[in-house]
Image (cartoon, rainbow, N blue to C red; front, side, top):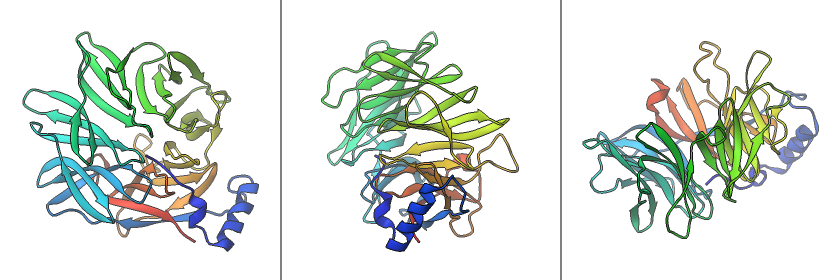
Length: 337
C-alpha cells in the first residue's frame, strides 16, 4: 500500500537539517526538502493514465491506456508490465495495491453497463461476488491484510459500502446513512473513513466516531493510514490541507489546499492551491508529518499530481501538458538532498 521510512533516504547532514526543521514552526526556516521526479517508461502502445498503488518496495501499479484499451499496468524493477483486464470485460481501473503486491480495482462491461470488483495477484484476476440485490460495485481500497473495500448501488437509488474480509466469504454490507454516506478509504485495522454530510466519520466493527473539524467550522477526511487521517478543512475563507492524528481536532498543513494520501509513517501527498482556477486543484505538494516539502516539476510538464504516498517514502502520480482529468505519463518522486 503506502509507505516505509523516508529517513533512510537522507544523507546525515540532511537528516540533521530535517531534525532542526521539525523542531521549528512550519515554514520558520523557509526550508522545503525536495522530492525529485523520475518519469517511468510506458509499455509499447501505452498512453495516458494514473498511478494509484504501490507495494512500498519501489514497485507501482496504475490504470493506463494500452493500444486504446484501459487496463492494469504495473512497474516491476522499473519496467512496465501489462497486467491486462479480466476476461469478458472491456476496461479496468486499478485503485490500490498492498504490501503483498495484491491489486484491487474495478472491471467494466461496456455492453451490459455492469461492473465487478477484482483483486489481482500473481495467479491472475479474481472477481468478487456481489451480495444479493447489489450491483455496479466499485473498488475503493485494499489494506495490508487483504480486506477489500467497495461501494455498490441498487434501485432506489440506494447506496451501500461492501467490506470483504481477507480470509474470504461474504462481505459486510454497510447501508448508506447520515454517518456512512460515502466510503473514502480503509485502514489496516479495518477502520473505514466515510463522508457523512458536511463532515467525516470513522467506522470500525459497527462503532462510529465523528471526525471533528475543530477548530475549523467544517472539514473532510480523504485518506487514512495507521490511524492518521488527512484531507481538507475550510479555513480563513479558503480550503486548507488538514491532518488528524486523533479524531478530536485538526491541524492545517502549510501551503496546501488538500491532502489526499498518507503512508504508515505520516508522509502525506497533497495538492497546492491553483492560483488561476479556484475550482480546480493545483500541482503536487507533500509533508513529512506537518513539515512541508517541495515536489519538483517533471521536465517541461506543466501539470503534475502525486496521488500516492508510498511506504518506501516515495510519491507517485502523473504529469501532463493536457487535461488532468485524462491522467498523463507515470511519475515517481524520491526525497533527495
